[in-house]
Length: 287
Image (cartoon, rainbow, N blue to C red; front, side, top):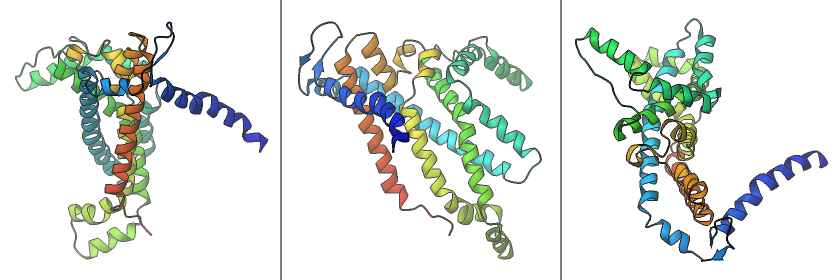
């Protein structure tokens, strides 16, 4: 058993103990300078009336919903196309997966340049628009509240799409071809085969990706910090985790920040359990 001792010590010191210490601090007022003061549940009571925190939860929900609906839908579409045994499948797998394994900080810095008013994205949009006689102009991706939210969603989708495609594609290629052969004999079209064969067998995989995507969205910090420093125009991109960071390290309210951390933790836990309870019963695995 001694071989697991180093891993156990690391988990204990860097994960378990900080979690309990953060819970302990959430009942105190502490700025790392003055002596801590026990205030009970006051941090949590203030939190539910904090308009900035509630806005950060709204932003997080928008990013989560947008990235899940658009991201998973697009990933499934690409995975279905790639499952048709096309040439160069290995190349496409690698190409789509590279953004997922690349450094998020480095990618966010590149995206900040791409999303400038005279950046690459606006250049491409205007070039395409000119072909149809349109002039979109300079979209202020990071300066306008609405476009800033769209930019963050696009970043999340681009970053996570490769992982989603790979998981979907792995499951698609594992489906027994005899199901589709039987459907062809019965005269089923492509839509019917997807509805009655592909989708039911993909549902457990979709549930897994839905859970992972929700957790990722609620933990998002780097894109907001780099693309929209300060939380974006009118705090339109301030997420729960970014608000936690600003509360702790800009305002030195560490007890309050710990309370925020635990509220976010229980929200993620609740959503994960809810997804499992509501959707888990519908999951159907191929026997």
